[in-house]
Length: 310
Image (cartoon, rainbow, N blue to C red; front, side, top):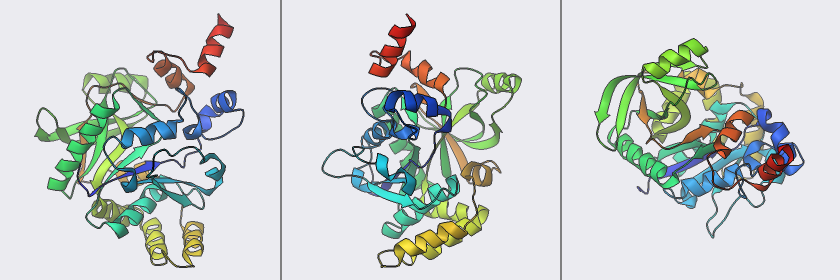
């Protein structure tokens, strides 16, 4: 892939809905991305291994929270670990995305950035990452576009966000990209069935865009967040860097990237359909057990639970 393609892995979430499962597996209340839910690797490690199939670890940044520091050990493999960007506090997903975007843009102003949550299951990682590379190549040709990846829906899921595609922007064997007509965030079951019948896509919250386009979106939609991060960037590499970042997070408002930037439907947004691989956001115990039903070998914790029930 292009030497200007960077990956950002979001690992700052609290994983509240999987707290009980994390406690069963690890014996504590750690966030789900640091839990080996589906095998012997944590969800974060699985995400990093998947991203590494298309983006070098040296061009990958993991953004997390200072409060997660005790869970970092053992997450990185190989001679070239990813960069770890530590937020001093949780100020929402807008800061969680714009902080690493500023960091990447400072190092590579021409960067194309792919944003990955750290709690997904993808059945065919190589196929998936090849598609990310194809979308990134399209973004390089259309630098003003910010592209969301949408998964083909398999049922009327009411806990996912849905994307209604609009006018096609490209339609080839390896890339199908549309404008976005509308978002449907966690619809009723009736509306979810209508979305399914209409060919709407599930919103994976995986994004691909030029660093400059992400920054423009931040300036337009969450100016207070973006301005604080931009001011802190001036202190990078100095003794005042930790203080500047702490001050930026202490003074910025909390903002959600989806609600502030995506859902208003800015004209530069687009959606690309990922290949028909099995994709799941492991946000609830129900989805975890649905995915476990597809894997050939149950992890030890699930096998023990299954044997206890039987």
